[in-house]
Length: 447
Image 1 (cartoon, one colour):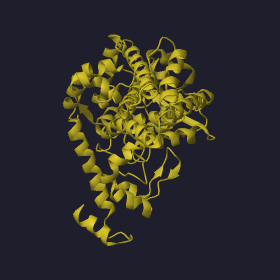
Image 2: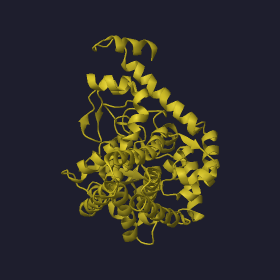
Image 3: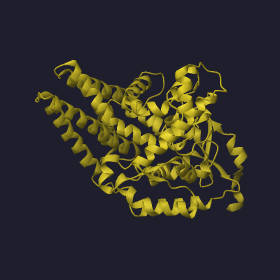
Image 4: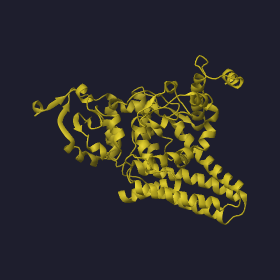
């Protein structure tokens, strides 16, 4: 009966917000996930970021209906006192329910099959171009196709990380290792570790690792105070080197994007050979070894060093389009400092994301991620449905007076460069002590 329920206040729930003492509320029922956090497939960080509060919307976004059965054993016996659901959340949950009833989360189309087939064909063409052709133009074309292969393979890895694209969990894991570790050299374990945190704390300067690029980039002057990254557990020092690099970031942005893969390679090794708990560490390391076997061997088959350097840089340059796309979705969106809150899930996603408008014939090129807001709101929704649900999301944003930003690829680039330039000029503020020279003064004057 209603009178027999035990209640806990929101303030009391907030006290259980740390590792080892981690409680959350889902639809007003309070659960103790302190021990479960260590086994959580998405890692402990997403739970810690939302600890001590109601997380219903985030739970619905990331978990299928089968997940509810596992909650009973975690129930504390408490209900959240004065539990209320905002109008935005009601509408969001209605959409999730409608999509589930329509079977949209299970209807994946044949995207994975087509993508993997395209990747396999591209790989064969690249091998033929390098091993059987003598023309430098054939080698350059092979490098371009390899870049496209890496892009498409990354999309498969991304999809399989959010929902099951194969017939079983085992095959899905295999697809992740093949498309991520073996083909691109980027660990799926590293991707999940950072990507889950990014989704939960979208555009939080101190909790979202996808915005923490000091000393090279800073999208906000908040970074000038040397913020502490809760994700990495260290201070993001804004030292003289960082200030100098950030001061010219609107000029260095595209060149850095060309070699951005090098950073991903480094981050992969740092995680896999760290003391952190890494799921399937052995499989991830094996996959990386596969990549670092075939890729250097392929490059070594080219006739001379100039062509080898050209091949690597050209393939990296093509893939840089994808790195640019990822930053366009967030760099010029709204940012904040602090933890995300579970009761404004919808609002935080609309605030921190930007869609890239394009014709449907280009959906393959952007991997569905041009619908960034739709993907953030419904991360389990297969990419073949994102264009269909876009009008519904747009209407919901309009109803609740929330931003829905959809820019062309060109306009999104301009917006990102403006954001970087604004922060760059703030970093050059001459009221702050920094070494001065004629070059510095000239750039500070003319931008």
